[in-house]
Image (cartoon, rainbow, N blue to C red; front, side):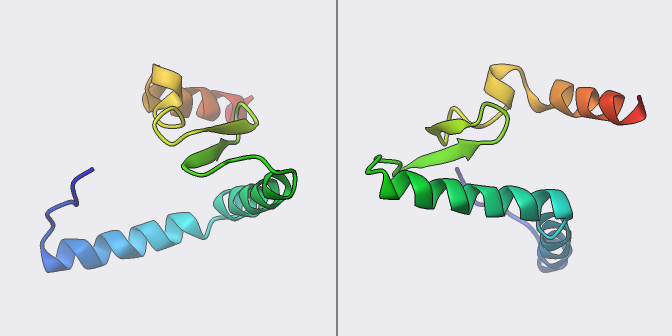
Length: 87
């Protein structure tokens, strides 16, 4: 994937937004879960190189397969998450 072509000010603002998103409680818990799962899988002798942990399906997938809500797109996923929170 090509690197984004951003102006210096846009790059700074994006770095701030990305850092803020990465430090939310939800992202922190997912990162911690991912680290635990990777350590466990490595100890069990599984080859997980080039794979990411999918928190929804609860298994390791290729990076490509773990993007975009399994081909359904991320807009629907976000909409469903908002609906669940409102209930």
